[in-house]
Every structure is written in structure tokens, then in C-alpha cells.
Length: 242
Image (tube, rainbow, N blue to C red; front, top):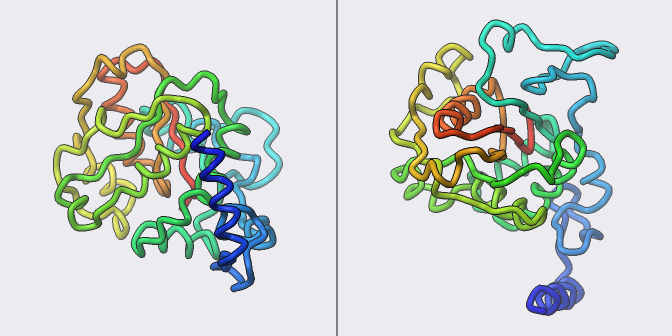
């Protein structure tokens, strides 16, 4: 009942104060969303041909299961990772606004992409618990929110699965990964995560949610900690792939 009342209130608010699409500046025609249909449909999604493990795009028409060179050289701890779109253009702009600019109202648009990718690339019914990539408390105080936690919580509610934002924690402050190469990313993030509630993770299928995946070092280290705590399966899902 509360959700129905909230939905009606949002419709009335949208009618009185139309949302303006951050992409084109026109009123949004997607109820309860910021991006209009035209801009949302223009977002560049990941191609269908990809590494079967990490989801890295593969050029050409590959019709068989393919594992990329990076995964063959160092197999990631997660069982599968997928991203909805490419970290470019309008999607990159909106992720930056959501992550660094406090544009929390973009949460639903970002989760629409996550939910679509989840349905296409995973068995949502097999997921037991949804967890975000955690921020260290020091960084969380500076930013005031964890964008990954907001996405994970919204997605968990949509698919009717448990959200746990406290089982997986970051145990130390790490250097930003932005300007590091793959090898230094792995070294920088090594041992940075721990599971404080193994009983909530053991024997379960865990879906780890983040905003952007680049080399997969952070998600791989999260998966390593979750597997050490007894997780049966660890899947990783992000809005975009860098």
C-alpha cells in the first residue's frame, strides 16, 4: 500500500514539476526516471560477444565460449562478471554525476541498466544475497554515501533478494585505482576486503554490485574474500565497463 501511495505521489509531482532529462534538457517521458526514452535508448550497451568469465568485449563474431588472455593468465576469483554498458559518452557523464556529484536521483536509471543486464546474463532466481563493493569508513565520511550500496540496495529490492551492506568490509584505505595499470591495481587492492559475517555468506550465491568495472581487480578481490568466507558462487555486476 505504501509503495502504491508513493508511486501516485511521484506521478503527481512529475506532472506538477516535470523531470528534466540530464542528457538532452527536455522533459523526461520515463515515469519516475531522469533520462528520457530517447537518451536512455541511446546509451551504448556491451556487445554480445565477450569473455565468458570477466565479460570483456571480444572483437569479431565469436560463437563459442571464449576466455580472454587476462583471465587465462590470472583466473579471477568471481565465477562471472558482466557490465550493462560502455563507460563512455552520456553514460560516463551520468555515472560521474551519480558517484561524485551527489546526483542520487539517478539511482533508478542506473539500476534499470543493472536489472536488464542481470536478467540477460544471470539467473536472478539463483541469487541469495546482494552486496555492494564497500568503501573504507574514512572515504565514506568524505563522500557521505557509497554509490555501490545505493545501487545494490535498489537492485535487491527489485528482484526480491536480501541486501547486505555490512557483511563485506574494506579493511584499509587504498590508493585510487583510476591511474594505475592492471598489475598495480591488483597489488593496490590485495587483501583490502574481509567478510565479518561469514555465516551470512557461507554456501550462498552472492551478487556483488559496483558502478564501473575496469580491469576487474577490485571485484576479483571482493570475490576472493567472499569465497574464503564460504560463498558457493560469486557473480559481479556493474553499470558500465571501462
